[in-house]
Image 1 (tube, rainbow, N blue to C red):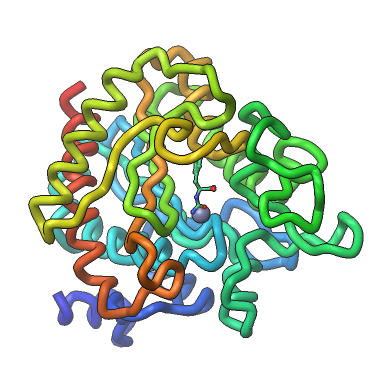
Image 2 (image 1 turned 45 degrees about the vertical axis):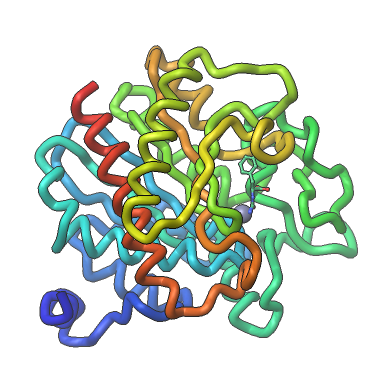
Length: 308
Ligand code: ING
Ligand code: ZN
């Protein structure tokens, strides 16, 4: 509630119902006891997150890998609030949430400085064109289908997997939770299209060993979302719903969890609102309803993690 938001942000209001800039997201995150930094972006900004909860099962939530998808960090901020002070704090004995609300800070700042449709990071090391598509830069069939070799492309995969400080730092930070088996679900937020995507997306043939489980939790999330504001979110494997996209963070996290011995890893890419009317320029008056419906999906996946 509003009073809590005031009191928990050093007396300043943090407005979850508008789009906030990087400095504001960071300042809000710093009001959390579990604030941490995990590296530095290409331009020298802090990569940060919050760790909330004492449970043995880790749920990772990240936002903002693509700069222009502003509803994504808006959801992470909303979720952080609901974890610390609201409807998700009931889970904190069972789950530890690792939430990274702005994992491509340089790109995000660039979209606030006038280049509103920027997608990639801001690495200038690859010739005349700027930026790597961070969601093609993870170690998941890197440079495979759906990723470009050309630095000028919006889907440029970078010279090697984890060549970028932003993706590499996420890998390094998550390693502890992958290796010790505590990471149960990896949830990464994009926009737009209203989809719930599960592995694999990195080639045209691979099937997740627990595809049936990923699909059934996905369908359950879709139904839960629909019940809130009657919005449709289709759930399915990436290559069935969209296109091949090698080097994505969801496929990397999924395979890393599998390799660590987790035989039922959960990994989802959420494409938030809308279905194309406003696209990346989603009006701020849709932040609240979008967040409300995604909360319903989060209850589904968190309960599934706790019960399994
Ligand atoms: N869409 C995702 C992209 O990176 C995606 C879609 C995600 C495809 C994960 C495959 C795997 O292209 C947006 N909106 O960025
Ligand atoms: Zn995206």
